[in-house]
Length: 193
Image (cartoon, rainbow, N blue to C red):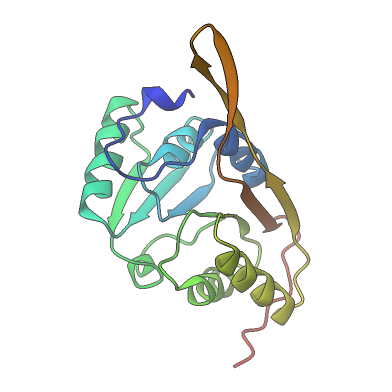
């Protein structure tokens, strides 16, 4: 889906090219239960909902402006399988159906707690996470090492053309690290507690 189709405001959004890779890496089934944590505008939730003919998306977001945008985009795209969950993970996940898939767009510094919870609830969960900040990427790599989990790591950088008079210049966007692991067959997970 094109980025300009989404209602945006000033809330960060996973761009279409990155979204396409992330949706592919999620390996969704029609009946998947997806947590979109740090859902922003809901662009990943909306695009994932297309594949979930019998599934559900829980779009978890702490910021009121973003919650309103997710709801507006949910309505715009008739994505009835999306439920907006107000709050910060992991606390906001309490009482939700167990996830089969998790997309991490932002965890508000609670990366380890969120991952520990979703993997404790479902060792077969498929996780895809995006990182722009190197510090957050480092936190993820340390967590993976601590739990001896092998993950696929993809770094992508997209450039888009911008007109300058009669010319086109390619303008680079932020590089994004996409980490994915888990899914069918499950993983051995210990919290180290």
